Length: 233
Ligand SMILES: CC(C)(COP(=O)(O)OP(=O)(O)OC[C@H]1O[C@@H](n2cnc3c(N)ncnc32)[C@H](O)[C@@H]1OP(=O)(O)O)[C@@H](O)C(=O)NCCC(=O)NCCS
Image 1 (cartoon, rainbow, N blue to C red):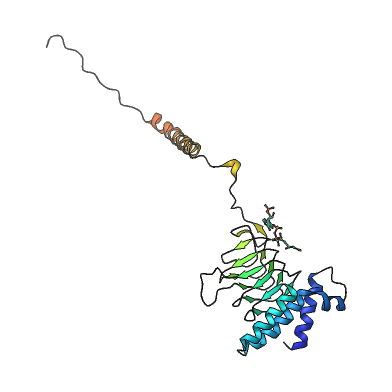
Image 2: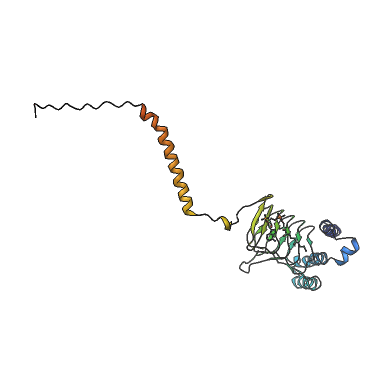
């Protein structure tokens, strides 16, 4: 995609995602997320040409003015929208797909235990809500939502909603996932055993009832008792 078309699509992303965006002038001059993305595109240009210091300087100057730190090595797709922006950190080996929304305070970082690729890969049309931390070199699938203040440490399949610390999937393909412990209805192993025994007894009773008519129909042979012979005794 050409330079001007990229700039245009970055601005379009603001209008598509922020109902508060009023006009071009305001968007171009006051949206710090947009400034950080543009600065990153320049920094990434130098990074790819191995001018690392130059790239880092641009990135740090941008951070000073916007409060958003994007490492020049990060790969960012089309129409990324960073709303509010302050406190966003995006690591060096992070990859971000198209039409992603990131709110303030988001970290796309490493755990500190990995080498090489150590930051997440974010799919297309992912929403990462304010304060969320996505840490490690796994992927977040397309169309997923990461809830505010979650700490995500594992792969997220596409079309999922992840919330909490550590992040757990609460919705997938629009359906709720019931994996929460219901503290008011904890399982009782004794009651479960009695229920199992009662079920066995009922089955055995039914089996006996089923066999009974057959047993009644079998005619028993009369037992012949030899007569008592007084003479022999
Ligand atoms: C996660 C989010 C994107 C919504 O995704 P969604 O797929 O529509 O999910 P839902 O709203 O249906 O919520 C699913 C469940 O997760 C819970 N949940 C949602 N966000 C949560 C969060 N951040 N922490 C804990 N639980 C959360 C909901 O209460 C709901 O639980 P329930 O099923 O028991 O009712 C949204 O809740 C969110 O965090 N938005 C924040 C946007 C933001 O950062 N705004 C700042 C603007 S300045």
